[in-house]
Length: 442
Image (cartoon, rainbow, N blue to C red; front, top):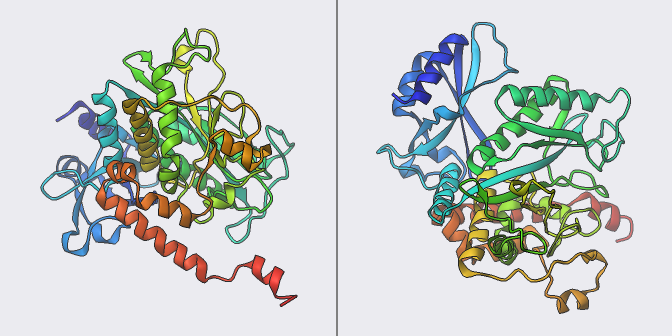
């Protein structure tokens, strides 16, 4: 019995745990869960718990549906916002395996594990620190804001500030370190930033974060949403992903002799992400609504470029602070918070590693406002665009060898198939814009 397993069993007894929620995700990033009683805990840790994989989006076909959820004892945490009458509630993330014990290749957690092994074979550890934005609304029926404040505003008697504070306490109680929280640019838009850690832990933390934000809001009769663009004419919600590669204790992105203090590895990584961003956009921006956010004028990147200070670029390199070489990193700004974090971190890493392997040059930084350039100037400087719709993203992703290699054949095919259905359903709907624009005049 491993030390982690012993810790789980001892803690469950000490904390009077009655139920343990076993968590995993489907390919779209929806959190799945079923609960076991503490009496089943030791057996679950040893042998896993069976379930029907054919009922999970993107998982098994009906003729190979038997799956096992193997709890990861290192992810055991108490759930602080659940009632404790009759016993406490805890959770563990699971790896999905086949009945014979081999990893299931459609498990998003396994997809990320596989990419991290590739990075490890190249001598790297992948660290990420995402900034997930979201909105508080009065209900899930319409986007009615709770406030009309702006970026970093402090509003007297702001109920949202209390919700953020309570959410931070809950996250920290579950072992998730928080750097800071604040009001974002749009009305009723907020952000809680998680302290950077290794990518697998962070993907688990991001899934937990989204649930905790929603649960705390629900407890106060408020609705929290990670929908990328819920309000027309206002900024949408992004998931800016800060990322770096380490070789042991050394930040592989830092070079004191470079004018921008970026190593050759960092520049090739940037180039890889830029080269393959259109191909993996379907993963980092996977909904029809995602492309309502990726339009000029709302701080969301549209054009594929990089810079140090310019926030209109897809990739930003935060300013270096003397003595903080380990903080050297890049910030990918195109992803939105409704993606599957396991797959999103996987594809960004895959693209960056390809850039390093091939020695792809990243070109010059673009410090000017790309939105203000005309098409001719952008073309002359080799600045291309991200896909403009889910359909465009699907078409590029479908032929992507990088995506097929990173996600695996099964996940790649299932994701494309799911998005084709979503696009077909979207096209069938008559939207309010059409009614308001055409009905009075046609």
